[in-house]
Image (cartoon, rainbow, N blue to C red; front, side):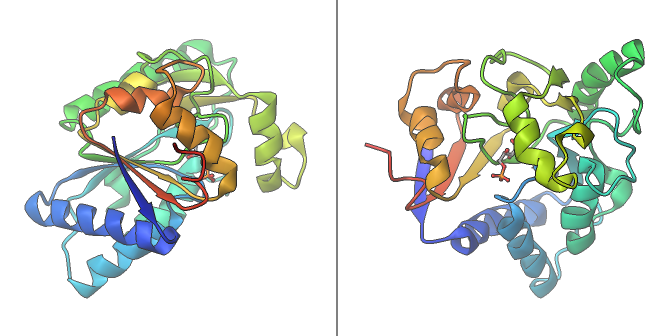
Length: 251
Ligand code: F6R
């Protein structure tokens, strides 16, 4: 992978935004892979301002998000559907009908709705394939090396599927649910590592000392399911953009 060390999130966001803006100019129906979380927010802001300043037509751009909770209706403010529409679709002016989140077809269906829930993953991978694949996938990384909701131990060949959230992830995400872990869903649907690896260009963003260990493991550790992000070492076009703190444990 190519490692780029930047001063701050804004500078990282500019690099992502320039790359995606040029892609959309060359391919107006580009397919963007989208992530939630805090790491991509400056990148989405930078892209929104380039789109505005350069009057780029984004009406044909398509998008696929990484993951979603199981059991939250789309309209719930903390669903990733709502989050992607609030932080990306709205600010960029994308066509909401062209942006997809893995749980869209479930709309809050519970885990007990077994067959329907199980079918959503393969259907999502098929939709990505039918769109011609993802051109640029933006990624954050968890402190434990997760990408999407692929926690340590996830198969590096996995497709989109239902996963159990770890206790730690539910504790981390309780801040979005009135600090009440009981309100945090227990399961999610996430693009697999195999799905993510099919994107033509991966851009992973990591900021702050809390990510330093995971970044070092991703870039310089062995390729292992214990650090799902380490699969990026096998990707032909992966760009890892980090600030000085997140780079601090690289050799
Ligand atoms: C987001 C996602 C997660 C986050 C990761 C980092 O859709 O799938 O893997 O990218 O947990 O989160 P932040 O950026 O909030 O540190």
